[in-house]
Length: 127
Image 1: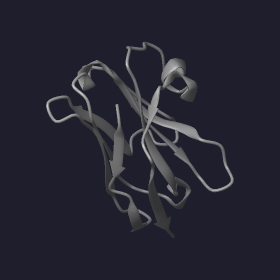
Image 2: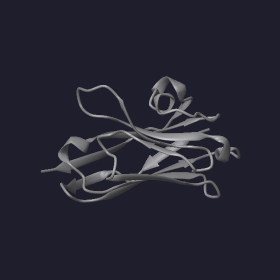
Image 3: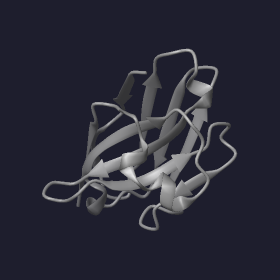
């Protein structure tokens, strides 16, 4: 599967952005999806994940209550609505896919569990 992330940009603190990830392939509905991010000079970190049918969602504590992940299996897309953005949210955001289900936060948060990665989209939040 190929993943194409979009929607990044420059926004002021307190603003909002919506990231989208379009996936190719006919079996998108069987993929666990997630967003990770990597800030300059820092390691990649888990942001949010969503189960194959969208029934379960997971968030890093740092974004809980501000970000919302969703998916549209009919359109092969996963989105990340980001509100109340902070300068610390500045990073390259990557969408990731795994062709099987997972069931625990720790599994969702482990980058090695994902088989496919998008190219990343840059989010810059100014203070």
